Image (cartoon, rainbow over all chains, first blue to last red; front, side):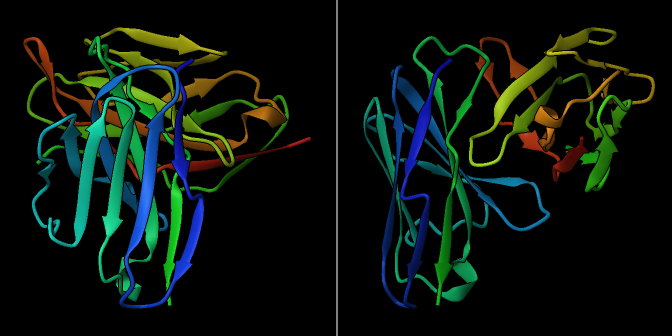
Length: 116
Length: 115
């Protein structure tokens, strides 16, 4: 089946620094990519939806200036957490839907971010 | 708003035991319902789905039936294996004509199967 990769799988950074997370669709073209955030024992919360070549649509309560999303190509989307703080520590998951818009979304394995 | 509630884990079973993971949803209408599974170190994978009332989704021995009367989509498997150990997520999504809404997930239920 389709594969979505994320890099890095785990990152530790100091407070105030920025962290970039990459999401790639490996064997299909993703017109739409999604970024989720998951806290321990909580459900996946959608942060934003991005379509290739256009600005991301952020969910209510998500700071677009803090969580920068770039969907520059049909196989790559990046999430940059700017000026990270300890409360940004979380598990970030990306997901991609293919060109055909079939019902299945493919998920990456997630990135664990720890901000010290 | 719309929401999904699933039983809290972790659930620990012995191999060949019967599995039920409860899932109920709150929504006005009839969304599509899904079960996703996340194996250790991997991304979520679609396990099964049902798009209308009374539909039964099935895959890999797992089944779930869309019950509109009880707004439920409980996941069942008759005989679990150690390899079924994973986190299971129930989810719903609306379909608007030709376009899709966003997935709304439950909190996930961790299943551990002991040999």
